[in-house]
Length: 275
Image (cartoon, rainbow, N blue to C red; front, side, top):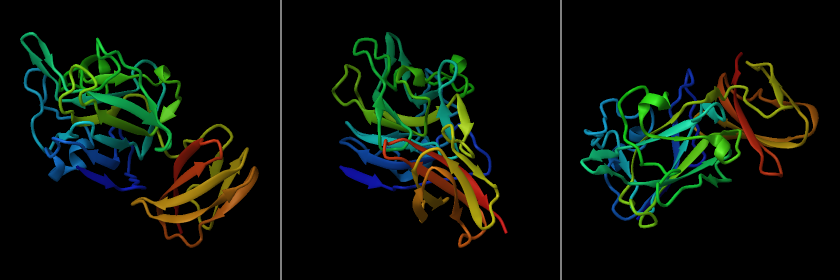
């Protein structure tokens, strides 16, 4: 068994999109191997456009087998999934229709805003509702759950307003349709750009910043500033009220700000330094 960790691993792209952008961590269980040579590219971006219920995806360039009880974390780096009407994100696996039903290989689904505190979606051991790997992909618009196939998840079921991470864990023998889960993609349906996304009461600017990034907070926050490839550059504490972060040592470019408080709340946003 192999474990690979790449934390923190942050990615920023020119324009946000609904696809998962990075895989900060993966752990392979027994039976894994398929697709590892193409990880993480084969689980990022949209699902296989050629997949259907009767001819599912079968290429290592599109799928990653987690192995029994293996798990993977997917991150939305340029946006966040938000609780909106109906399904908020979908998970795609290579479920196949058979003459008597479906060939399924399932995974438990957990979500997190900060990558540290996780909430699992409830699931039904009989119907398998609440698991990933239950419904086949149609090859149609992956952002429209009414036509896309795959398994849709509504954040209101777990009481979260937004998330940035999804963790999928192969069910192993815990459910009747365990098998070896083959991940294709995770896609946001309701989402918002990460630039400027923060809880109420947190404001920042100017953006682009030159020497100082002004941040207004309503309570103390610990901050960290990362480069877009995940390197920690600055860290410190912001007290309640108006404050500034000295960014004069940072070259022109795009950066990721992470805020955490003592109650395990967190938020993040992108900002630009320009001179």
